[in-house]
Image 1 (cartoon, one colour):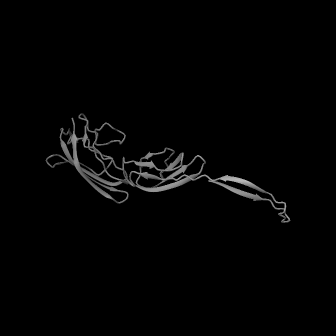
Image 2: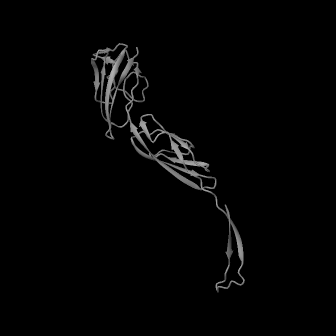
Image 3: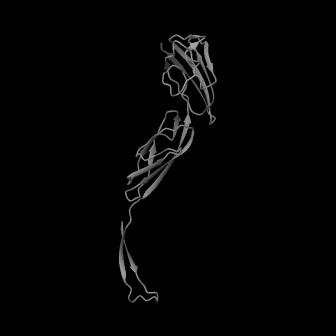
Length: 211
């Protein structure tokens, strides 16, 4: 709103008989209101993003800090955390008069082990199960996970025979058994992972080999 102030001049002797008053008009602008919502306050790594919906009022610019070193000025950002932990998301909303307001929210990044349900092993050579998470050839059966301290995985054929086992999450199954490529079929896996936050997850499922 607009406010009127009066300035009165008084001599050093305290004389006010000849004092003069001057009107001053001061306009006070409203602060913006920073606020936002997220799709979930707990997200599962890898792959589940934090999606922020900006509900601020009276703002024209935004600055986000996701607590892991990532910042952005997008209005409605999406962010993927790479490490487990608790993170404070901070939004600073600024209006056209450079007045600002701040909103904060804490989110948790937890983890799970995620497996594909089909893969296509190399029919000519076994590589021992070594893989890279950036290799999308789909020739190795391996889990997607973050923050795993201990891991074990077993693969069984349809008759319940154990045909592969590993305790190294960096080694997957290449679809070979006893020096021969396994036939196209459905196989059963069991995996146990203990994460750095102390949680233990057990997963069971089927995977199809395609030839």
